[in-house]
Length: 107
Image (tube, rainbow, N blue to C red):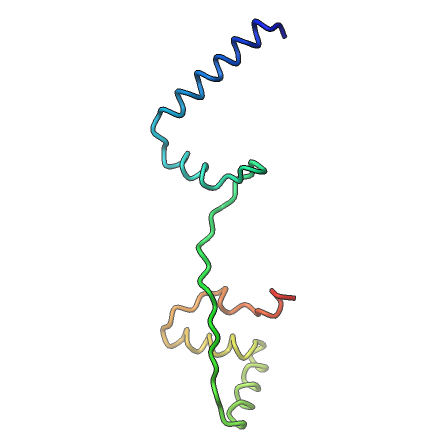
């Protein structure tokens, strides 16, 4: 490519870039710009911000704890998931990812 062709294509690109920067960004362009990782140019899907987990301590009679353990084993889920499922049935907004076994995620 000759220098003259190269110079004109660079000027054309500069002009195009200037016109794009001066135009109003469309919602799609803004979403893509926000989701693009500048280091890899890969587009990532924005995730919901994670809500931090907080610890809950619950004291139970030993026999009640055994019953809870048996019920959760019979349901093939952790006690945590079993309790969260019961809370969901009572109308609390428990999501499917809340029921995931945290031990598998951290392992």
